[in-house]
Amino acid sequence: MTVPLVCVFAWSRHGSTSEIAQSIAADLAAMGVQVEQPSEAPSDPTRYDLLVLGSAVYSNQWLPAATCYLRCQAAALATTRVAVFSSGLGAPSRFLPGGWGHRLQTGIQQSFEHRYFYGHLDREVLSLRERLMMDILGTPDGDRRDWTSINQWALMLADQVRLARGRTSLDH
Ligand SMILES: Cc1cc2nc3c(=O)[nH]c(=O)nc-3n(C[C@H](O)[C@H](O)[C@H](O)COP(=O)(O)O)c2cc1C
Image (cartoon, rainbow, N blue to C red; front, side):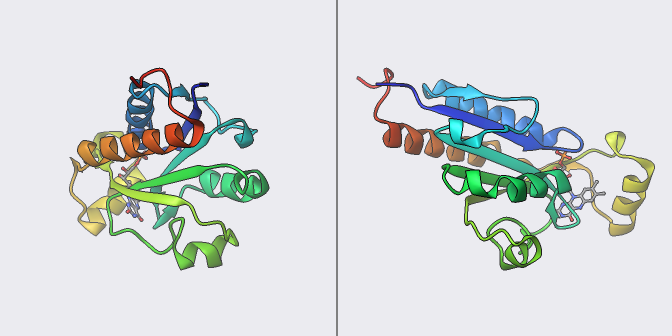
């Protein structure tokens, strides 16, 4: 049986969403899945058995480059198994993938498997403008990433993609 090929990519401004992507990639690899983590979003998503995409949430939405990718690659993504995650500190918004606000705002109609994970705020790495914004909003620093939930989601994705592809050499 061939080993499924998965691509994990995330758009991140200060690195914490990339760390979530790295953790997901490591879990998938540990489950016997072949994982690619390109430095840029893949130009040919159809190469993969599964594409895992994530973005940090700013202004209640995905980063512009992330939304742009979903829009530009809409045709290819429609024929690819895609799972997406968002990482932010507020309540999950309707302007994230899957929400009606997202469909309305972006014109993207495809529904994806979507998970929301709480993120990480560290004033040390923020720009002055961002720090001021967080001060005004009264948002405290802290790492709220739930590694257990992230890990569980990755294991579920690994199971799904392995089932879809047929069992790999890790099975007995
Ligand atoms: C200026 C600024 C604006 C933010 N706006 C939102 C927001 O609108 N909604 C939300 O859920 N989180 C918001 N956050 C929290 C970030 O999404 C969170 O810190 C995330 O983990 C950052 O990911 P990154 O390190 O990958 O950039 C904001 C953070 C900053 C610094």
